[in-house]
Structures are given as C-alpha cells and as structure tokens.
Image 1 (cartoon, rainbow over the protein chains, first blue to last red):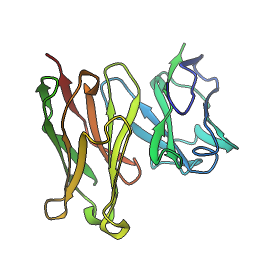
Image 2: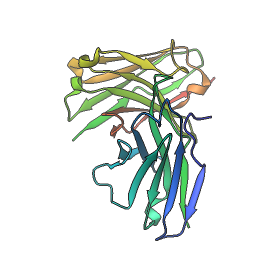
Image 3: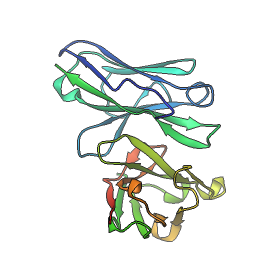
Image 4: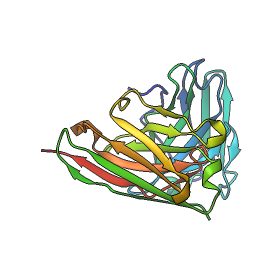
Amino acid sequence: QSVLTQPPSVSAAPGQKVTISCSGSNSNVGINYVSWYQQFPGTAPKVIIYDSDKRASGIPDRFSASKSGASTTLAITGLQTGDEADYYCGTWDNSLSAEVFGGGTKLTVL
Amino acid sequence: EVQLVESGGGFVQPGGSLRLSCAASGFTFSDHYMDWVRQAPGKGLEWVGRSRSRAHGSTTEYAASVKGRFTISRDESKNSVYVQMNSLQTEDTAVYYCTTDYFQHWGQGSLVTVSS
C-alpha cells in the first residue's frame, strides 16, 4: 500500500465540485510541500498543483488545493468531461528519504 | 521548451540488466535534480530515485525497492541522466519516466518488460 492515502475513485456530475483527499503523516505531508498530478490513459503525468497550493502554468483556477496538518485536498469546480483522469498526490518523506505518492484517484464525470 | 526523451527500454529476462537513458534539453541541465519514476501496468506512480545537481553534491537517493540493484548517473557533457538496472525482476516491469524540476516536467516514458 502507498505511504499517502487517496480514495480509489470519486465521481460527480458535469458542473459540480469534487474533492480528492490525500492523507499522510508528520514525516511527509505534514512538513513538506505537496504536488498534485493529473494523468490521462497512456500519457505521462502532468503537474497541476505544486508547493501545496500553487497552480502550474496553464492550469485553470477551477483547480485548487489546500493543506491542513498531514492532509491535503485537491478541489475541482465546474467539472468538465475532460477532467476525467487519474489524480495523484506526491511529496518527499523525510523518514524514508524518498519521494512518495498516493495510490491515485480515478475521477469520473458522470 | 523543456524536453526529456527516454530511451533504452525493452524486453529482458529475470536476472538481466538494462540501462535507460534520458536526454534533456531546454534548460540548464547541470543546475537541476533529475528523478526517475515508474508505473507498473494498471498501477500507480512509484519513485525510483534521484540524481542531485552538482551544487547539491551530485548525490543520489533510491527507493528501497531498487536500492542495491539500480544505479542512477548523469553525464553533464551530454545533458543526460541514466538508470542502470541490474538483477531485474518481474515486478520491475513498468513504464519508466524521467522527470525534472521537482516533477514539473516529464518525459514520454520507456517501457521495460521483465519476463521469462
């Protein structure tokens, strides 16, 4: 199992809001910046959020993230069918001296 | 524009070796960390290891699952980073991605298949 815990799947209707949680510990999320990645089938991941809450270049403001303690949450508002993808959180773990990722969350836009 | 191009993937038998290359362009290679991340078929992302820049001691870090079997190196003259993979096991089968700038930029990936 992954060091960071994400729900396997989330779903919502077009236009609605969805949140994806990422839970870690005081050796990773609690003390380091977190990034969020979006991955479409057959393609490389793309960073959408870095430094816990900064949107990467070209990412619309429908995407946002917040962090509280050892957990972080990605929020996507105004859902579009094109947002259907896998989403991963990732950060450095000071105890493991390793980058760690969540197991990924599959977003379905119904 | 940052570009990362992996090469060297392929089919190898268990216990075999393979070296992946990643050619970088569009940025000052010597100033940047380079990471390898892999993704087994139908699975999530797994960090493989990191090569730090010269300014940070040119050190490397590895995931526990590959430590002692994989070696990451870089050639500043060729703007390239490599991962030498030895004692490959079936569970090493994955697409291997080269990334930089703390995962801001990714290559297209190179598939490694370990099977008898």
